[in-house]
Image 1 (tube, rainbow, N blue to C red):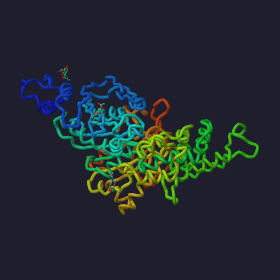
Image 2: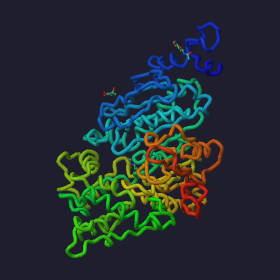
Image 3: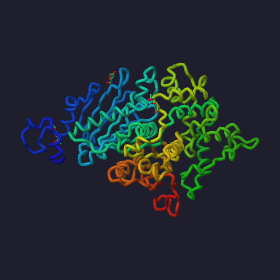
Image 4: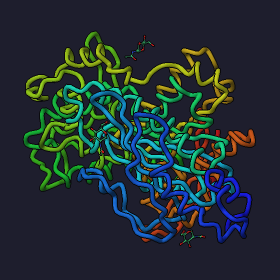
Length: 540
Ligand SMILES: *[C@@H]1O[C@H](CO)[C@@H](O)[C@H](O)[C@H]1NC(C)=O
Ligand SMILES: *[C@@H]1O[C@H](CO)[C@@H](O)[C@H](O)[C@H]1NC(C)=O
Ligand SMILES: *[C@@H]1O[C@H](CO)[C@@H](O)[C@H](O)[C@H]1NC(C)=O
């Protein structure tokens, strides 16, 4: 049961009318206080309470989003802790609004009075319910938001700049401010520390917060960040249209992608001294697709070899995307997870590019990749850069705020190369004129070998990060050493992370490996011994 002081604090509003009985018999307990938010929580004119309900541990929950692309954001199992669930609609302009949820656990006061807010993915649009469930079970009052529109789609941007503005930064900032008010109101106490965690689009949101409004978060965790956003949106179509040749018929069949992925791993896996399906440092891996070129008279059917056109495609897949005048725009793909990379080479032009150009950049429904995408269009997108969504500034504000940023990126990320995070880190070194030893006081970067895009992978990929809770037996794992609790230690005890502990699993969810991932610019180094044990690895 909760302690008496917990109830005393809660009961500030109604306690005067109540007899002084034992705390547990007070009607003004957590669940009633929670449902009372419908009447009691009015932070401002812009905010409407849609739902306020107590959900006991073990109860079931259904993702309330009406958009089919969001339903995967809740795969259960069930509510992991006693929580107060608050759903709000916050208007951000005459044509835009944010839907947000706060999942506030009953044990918040004993768990350090922490606030956390999660990010989104893709062009979403979807509240990260799995993250809300897991992070609230660790005692954080946790907020999620729909980033200003429903669904992993750019259609709502059409002729509504307010929705684009929400997507670029305002939904996160708004949900943070309103979420903090809700937390302080529910518990009648002021929260102590505030955290952000997100991956992919969520990683970009984290960098945006670190660059522009770091005062809101004591600790920011940004994974696989999609900053350099406009060029990221363009790169999918550059590789699809100009490298794969528009892909009709597809440049590689599904079977050929699998074969090539296996070849890529074969060529690069052992560079680190261990054959374990993990390319420990893809920066050292120089693929040679020519090794699989068909000799005259040979074919895929006869020899599982590739044509000249396919080999040319595979060579260019890993090379950067350059624009007009040879300007660097975006890194090529990382090796080792090519079956995932293949999603950008489907029959149709990449939808993210289509939606971004049609609805956010040009307001032109008739725009197509096939007819209209070229390097001049890329220049246009970069010159418009709506609400500075490129997210490529330095971290002067973060440094001045005294707050912390931890970034990570899966070195096996086949959707969005780790090189984007490498490059951002090094650009901050140069722009701020600070070597790594000095950035370390507020910005640390951990490349994670064996992690794909945000979750899953062939190695010790589970690091207690955003979007990882559905893909692993997260609830059975001690969160210490993962990115979230390492950040908490850094912020609250001043103990900065030197390594991030990762775990790998067998296909049936048993723990298979543990590894401490090194802080950039150090790299994981095999020392000898059983490679599934962390004692077999060091940093150098
Ligand atoms: C909280 O109050 C409700 C009704 O007011 C009651 O049904 C419930 O048992 C109480 N819970 C606790 C934990 O005291
Ligand atoms: C949220 O509020 C806006 C007005 O500010 C309204 O247009 C919209 O329909 C509301 N959404 C929901 C889900 O209530
Ligand atoms: C984008 O950033 C620049 C430079 O920091 C600033 O001058 C400009 O106002 C920003 N634009 C928007 C729309 O936020």
